[in-house]
Length: 457
Ligand SMILES: Nc1ncnc2c1ncn2[C@@H]1O[C@H](COP(=O)(O)OP(=O)(O)OP(=O)(O)O)[C@@H](O)[C@H]1O
Ligand SMILES: [Mg+2]
Image 1: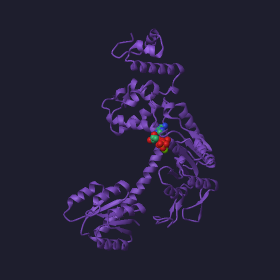
Image 2 (image 1 turned 90 degrees about the vertical axis):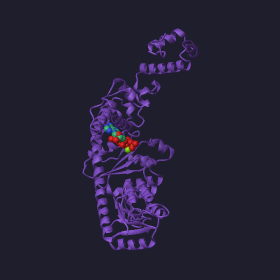
Image 3 (image 1 turned 30 degrees about the vertical axis):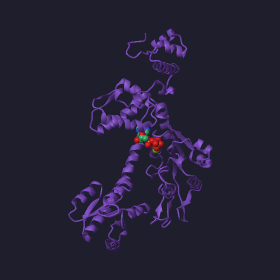
Image 4 (image 1 turned 180 degrees about the vertical axis):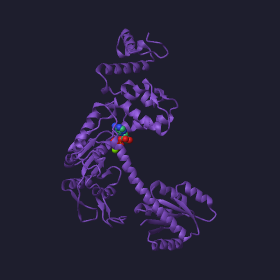
């Protein structure tokens, strides 16, 4: 049954209506103002909040805004005074589920609560459906034709059907989650559950009860027993994302689960047996973490039976055009626009860029360019400065042959020195201890032009 929090500064109103809700089978509690309400919201789980608009300490709209910011999944029903239509409008604009006019009619109140409950149920079904769809979508696409991606695909095909634990490593945004999805989609029981836990997103105690579940009454707010993700993953895949962030306590609890395949819920004594295939991912270098003493060595060996590494995007520049095409096409069709292409200079800049955020950064850029561009051709000037105006230096030298790298360095060095000396060739030559004639020759070879002149003197 849904849990409802009633907020009003009128104590007798609270008493009467919370009784009515309870006798209709709801779990109801009350708060006599915004501050008390926020405190109760922070402590327990709530489905529906019913709040008065006019209250002395914190206005109901303010309460509504805070709830929507901190607990967007809670449905809020606002109570307005008769004739206060502006309050009702504002409430709806701020995301209230609905509003009711005081004095409340009990039937109407109960009907609206019932509808809100149905809405919540539908919403949570949609949510699971949506995550299923998105993981399916993710699992079908690993764009790339570079040797390292082809090799990765081969490895995935080979190890997916095995039951061994896989550790996926790679910088942020390289596609670790896609790889995890592919491993599950190609395992022996792809119909089984795939359950994800993000070890970085939650505080230790919350994460613990998410992983292991808890028994009723294990802590304040544990109003009912809840199975953990380990239990939910039974017979399927457990994906521990950002495993490098796991606290020492949870590391040792996890180790025990992996060794003994059993555990107890938080606050429980019953031993629960589990069996799942473990996939972990991290953008940290766990070996270094082990050396630092931040990650248990025994756990490291347990989770790292099969290592899979995804190369950063800048080390597989040939995938950049493919990824761009894929995402530009996708966003163009979403926005009902014609095909967009990059000119040569723009594509060169994109291929040479360092992509610290890897494919995620590329994907975001593709979306931005699709929205912002007005013609079919995207030029270098339309790219962010950090991409187009890049210095030769910052180009990834590891992508270049020796001669190319040497030229990139020489060119950048000479341009900087010339700039420093106001493009005075004699002064520059003297400073860098090169004969003036040789500097001129270099400038010609490397096509360095004095600004405003056609070519080097
Ligand atoms: N090879 C690829 N082909 C298509 N899309 C990709 C590829 N690699 C990554 N992406 C997309 O880039 C985004 C980031 O990928 P993902 O979430 O898997 O990264 P991650 O490695 O898990 O990053 P983080 O460490 O930040 O969690 C996702 O939207 C994903 O779909
Ligand atoms: Mg990820």
